[in-house]
Image (cartoon, rainbow, N blue to C red; front, side, top):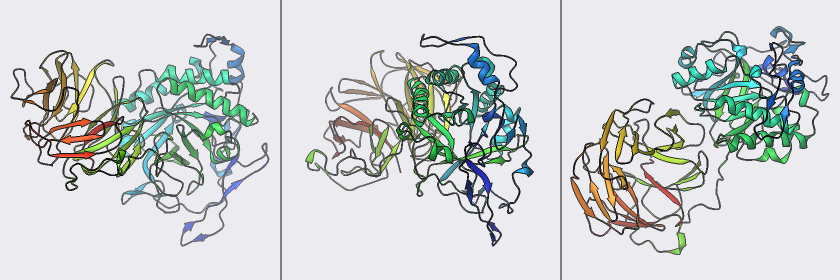
Length: 582
């Protein structure tokens, strides 16, 4: 997406060169009509010059009227006029790069495990490198892109109102290739909205195109066109609110894209303080000077990536805590000291059996909305790590998705799964579609390879998949009854997870993924107890934990009798998961 707003200057005033490292100063202009601006592109300043026509009429989904052909024609008649385009023609780069020190030869690349900027300095907080693309890049060779160190892509789906003639011509090819190759992606739409009705239509434009797609990054609203600059700040906020509310209501993360000047001078309505909206900031500079938290920085429009002819925008996902670059998830920045952090002595109850802290085995995490409070030991006290991930209403699975010995989270939405390979906020590392929306889903290491994968349960039949991929099950077994509660664990420490059926307070353990009778049966606890499963002492064998309110009774063997350890953690209404977090 190249239009980098009409105000923020892309001119870099070069004061001096010291030790062959360029000194960069971002220049701003004050006059709206004559200002020096950041890099712009055909996508942003006149997306419609090559339209072959428009849909005569689009009926709004809310049934409140139609957008007429005049609305489409107004957009169609716009021509690119920006710092990079003049009357629809590209300004040659030599005209706006008049004086510039030589860039660091490995600018925007990873060197010794860290990303470097154009001045040869480490980009603090950058964790992933991505690109944003549209039809202006032509047909992309995505296999070469992936091989060139690109971690993700933000793909333009279209521009303006919900007309098929305003779909991006490369949208389907770009998104299908990313899904085929497992490249995580998000989307953006270039906005011409001057009313909330137009914003609603643009949101519906996105939703029409992303239906059935597997987004791992947010849907971004690019609202910086010259034609909208003079709208009141209140109306800009209402337009953004309408778009974002429509996208969020459909179950997608949403965000706003703008250059630094727009963020500081145009997007000043209080609605932009919404912490659930991801912020994507464009500033072509050696660093980003946005004073608030943000998720993504677009650092240049002159990046080069194998598989793409010509230049492409380069972005970094910022997920490190370095000054103004704070970790968050789709714009949700966790508090450093949230008011609802688990108490060091919750409910003022004594530690029933404090024992000694240990990190060799599984421990607990409590979930409150989309905030997760991880504990690294089976002990009382506050959380050791707090992150945010996904939405408050997401279904969550826990597993070791990459075989590194550490459990992490997976968000499930329908039959799409968003796997995270680290205990951190930010976008998913892998997105997979499997099974049906109404399936009950379990996770476990079904073949002993060290990687947890999925199992779909339908009644008492289990469809087991041995890889994090779509397609048919690798194994199907029948066990127990349709209405049984089912647990997953490695009950005999052989490295493979199997099933356990629970009926009341009686547990039927199976040590192989096969039909037939249980291998062992024990009674434990009460029929009303909540149960967690984990390897609590690090001996390789999963056992049971009874939860009663915020009290956890751990058993280190598959047998009846009293608990081996009891601790207090969190609150009685917390959602709790077990895993090996460290």
